[in-house]
Image 1 (cartoon, rainbow over the protein chains, first blue to last red):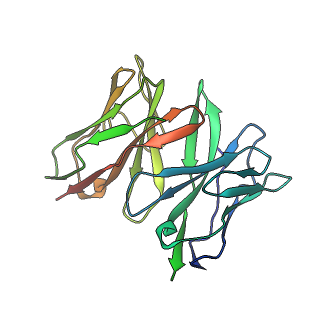
Image 2 (image 1 turned 90 degrees about the horizontal axis):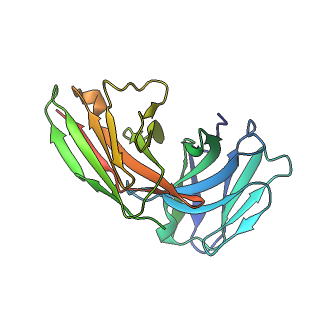
Length: 112
Length: 112
């Protein structure tokens, strides 16, 4: 199972872009990269996912390197409400479904 | 999207007893997943539950300790058996809908 490594914590000034890196050097060709966040012990919330192309939605952008060994989640204009733990996850197929294996997460603190 | 409801939201239990956590999804789903989140830690997958068959447990988790039921396509239960203080954690139910995984708000269990 592909594993992910993330920095333990990061700070970001309010209004600036938050760039959260993730390393997944053992990822396989059919395994997707997902990002979720968890705010103060609530259930994890979906942010974005991708396979090999860069992706953007209303919440964030996901940049995946060409070799797919790492990725970066970008929150373009961080707000105080973006303070949370951000998890980089590899989703891989198994027995007709998928497993979502969580990394250790990055605790992002957005500073006023 | 899918909405997942968990009950109870929290409980304090005596060691040696068992607690059953219920998970209800507002849509029919093939697979449901149970996670444990120990204090300050990431989410760890306990098992995957398919309707009508035995759950598949991850390494380090056994059916005797965490029996799971999956009686239909919208419901599952996880029992934490013969509890000890080390079982104090948040337990989360999850399922996949389309390309996303959705999570319940979790059950915060404290064993005294």
